[in-house]
Image (tube, rainbow, N blue to C red):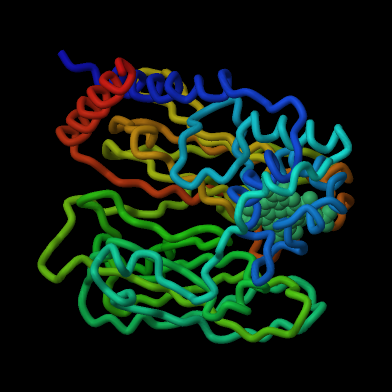
Length: 440
Ligand code: HEC
């Protein structure tokens, strides 16, 4: 008899085994120099933000630009705060589609370079400057043979004055669609090139009345999240999100100081499946974690853990994990408890930062396949002590709420539900793929 629990465990375990080797065999250069060893890393992992017309405070393209920041770079790189990617590397799934973190080898190379006085090295070793697009482009249009998305929705413009404090701007805009449409890709981008200097990230929720919720307005689902360096979201084959007539888009945009006054808006680009072509699976973004008004209860000067459970009523593939907390947010984990009792940590974010709303998107062969009846446990840790540098006041009680000084503790999780039959098939084909790739 086919044991679904065993298969799920195997699928998870195999993914974990495959994640190990690369770091172990990598080598760190003996006398790293900027031109030979560091510049290629910065081009690959930092420049997307650390260049003019992007969000970071200083460019890191040349030796002259980078050298003054050596001490600060050492601290941020060693603690894995930069690049912003806060997944705990010691536990859970480690293969993601959008991983922008440094490898252990890259970190060791950067630290060795700085500890040896951060030398420039031979100018002739310097790689050619990386060319960044100056024009605003749509990433997916070409894939679908189009010039631009089928539908573009713009947020109400915001003017961010030079030197102004961070702002969270939350306009709501109608989609204007008149019939249900299946979405196969989504992109979000700042409206103008200058806008990139003030747009830290943007969350996009869809607010629509779900048919199966008896006409009750369902909790608005997160549709798409954008942060610097992110291209967008292509649905997996035969999978889509459903957009309904009457739907509205709720933007939540984090603007920060760009050094000069800039007016900008966000553009949400949506690509539809052709009419009449319905994908088999619907992807839904679920809010997991207890968000009831009484759920969050954090006394002053305390670290508090809040646990909550959701049961999957159908087999499912978990596509992504995005913790959502505010200024006291410290860590969040998502675990799967299989019907037989085995437990797996799927993902753990150890150093949560409110500044970075990272969505961690699992790689195709790493996205957990879970049987019906699996319990997803989300644990949120809040640090309301003075040790938390982001904490505005450790001496007050903190409860649930919308403001950043209130708290939340849930994860946005993209889920594709599967029939039992498709679930078994998915596991079988994945195991086959993993087995043959291991034999090579
Ligand atoms: C996704 C965008 C992004 C990427 C990628 C990124 N950074 Fe940053 N970095 C920022 C932003 C924004 C800030 C300022 C806000 C903050 O500190 O979070 C920053 C701040 C820093 C600081 C602190 C500057 C100070 O004021 O002391 C250092 C150092 C740094 N980054 C180094 C790096 C290095 C090195 C890399 C690549 C290995 C990198 N960053 C990759 C966006 C990014």
